[in-house]
Length: 217
Image: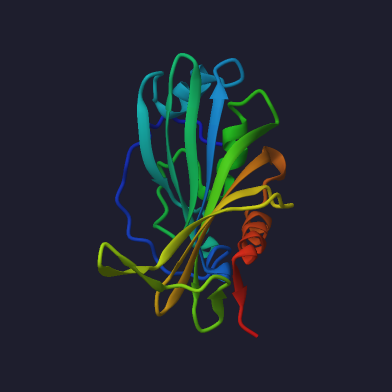
């Protein structure tokens, strides 16, 4: 847990390609959007540890403690008089460690929990995959061509409203190129901070997208 005051700020980093939890599933990003009421979020403690005051916004990249983790964090948000809204994005590719970072990528959920009175939170979550066409394909024929206003138009991406499912996935988006099948999936989840496991999360999202993409035999 960081003890020194450190203002979160945006830093430019060049991600390094290292095999990891996300790349194992051809996953580019997994993101969680939190909105805490001020009654359950300790804004004063958050300000002491980060240097961010209510009304200020932030955007930063957080490195992993161990580069072999293979991912880093994009962390941004804003604390107001009524709520604290923030997004935690796990992004494929590692970045160089930063000794002044207030928290490392691997422990951001447990760190975030130290500011929240509740042990869990309902969140909007989403994941983005880029599957190689050598081993994956869309269940929907993409791309396809249609005629609009007398001109031929190529449709290479579609949006999907998903049926009720065990993954709590609500929306999907599907695209295709010669080399990749891109899949996005949105869901509503209950995050238990002390039980958060990124590996299980990515595996669950990967199963969810199989409603509209599939591995080749």
